[in-house]
Image (cartoon, rainbow, N blue to C red; front, side, top):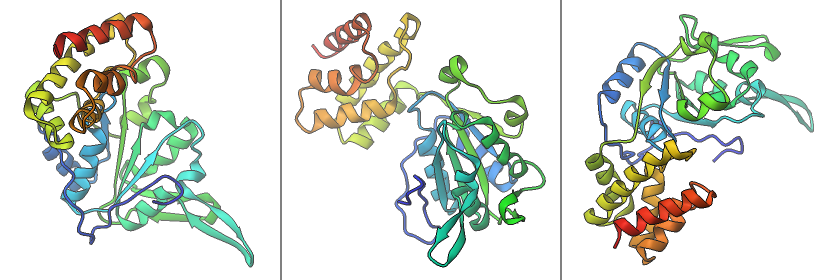
Length: 272
């Protein structure tokens, strides 16, 4: 994996299909957006499958995938590129966004609102009819190669309290609303990804749905499908189910004694 935190699936590499179980028409919508050269915004809670959907679609569309984890210190130069000092002078190095534009890759910006607003602005020319990336430092305008698509994600519930995306940016994307799957779907995902038995997967998802109801009592983040898979993996490999739930599900969610106590009670009621 490159040092900038990105990764890609090359179109000619035999990559195994990333498992994704659709709950609606998100796959057909994504395919149409790609065909019509439309940028996509994935909205949904942490761990509901946004990243896995992008990985699955990159495999399905046979496009390279470049993923960028956004954060407060992400500068425009981190996306576009910069001049590097070599022993024989300076050399320009493309950033992950520029590579995606040149290669016709799917570029996925995870939790895009974590990036600074002046950084997000560089995406605008790629999300309208221009489909090009201006690079001021090299006095170059890079047209998007065929197959390029910009995809961003964020968690509306979490960001509403902290940050949000400017309307001028939001309206450049087709938005796909994702959520945790229905019980049977989520249980199938947990079973498939962890290798646990169907009864344990079903019980863990039922437990998660009860814990998710604690959001109104101050739980900032609810248990994700990702946490359920981790918990099921621990249990499948010999950790007692109560201990697996405490370590893999309860403790990562909160340090508040009353909330932790309530979640532990739910664990004990689920796995008697």
